[in-house]
Image 1 (cartoon, rainbow, N blue to C red):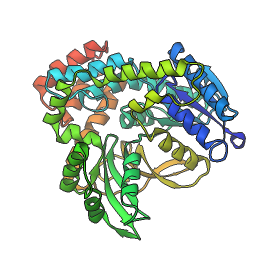
Image 2: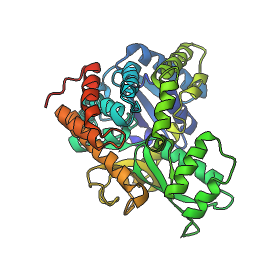
Image 3: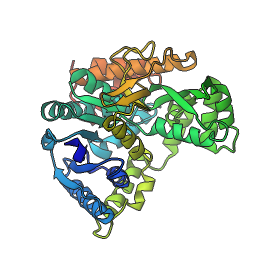
Image 4: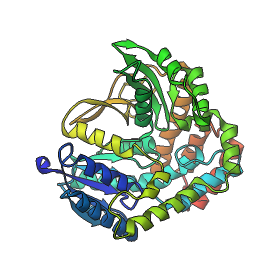
Length: 425
């Protein structure tokens, strides 16, 4: 039973993020989070073996008794499985490299979670995620999928609309920003609570409360009063303009020319950089004397990833009603976003899952941006499910970074061909 410890499955377990999760299990075991078994699932048997071996050594070195199971297909899921973390990457870094380079030829940023790159990643990934969702429906319908597969909000919306599986879309972006804000403002506002509105990778912390009152304007001013590095200066300019603190991904939208120039000037794509880092992580993980998180992980990014995972796990398991940012269907929480469309908002998390807290209207300062990207996301889900190039073109027509039909038609044709996606309708 769950009391003796939960069974946690990780699909895409060959990912370089896996040691973060395992470290998180170990640090919280058994008092905060009793985990009896970890099911590691990945189609790449070599990477799976490396990560399973490392997981066994990390657990043994920490004296944490956990069964480690390794499988190459979601068939391993069973009635015992309680939670499934999904972190798959269809096509690997080679596909990501195409997503990052092809749009640049057309003067548009190539990015794995938005624009033409995010579209193509979703088109490749949604069918695979729906297969996983169907396995969950059949084998462990009570289980929760905690999704990190990018683009997280789009993937979550697809699974919610086209399967009966329970899924919560997670991302470390907003929770990490909330933690940074709380730490920086702790002296003035020791009981600070922050709320967000937007979409995954298009999120804004737009409400700050302390002592039972709204302190938004003052909190934002104070947060940016310190010495700022270049990235923080870019963030501050947006925050002062719109009255909300954005996550870093906003740069792609509001510093478009700069983003494209930087990408064109970079000697390597992010995909190429990550490929090198991942090779180092895997080499280190494969060594029999490695019994902890590989040092090379620091260069991979995605910190805070374990924290939000276990915060959500704990809230569901212990039915706490904790307030945590997640990607869930709006269900009336955000005005102007359809009930079944996914938004990234603060939710109450308990044994029933994540229920969005009422947000109301999106601030007008960035409402149009959020709604345009939401239209792109929902059209992307439909394009993937119906294998429709026409719907994919409609998605890019709505995307604020694309929108030009003379670019959309050749760009999409080139990208679909590059990925071997045979979309007709």
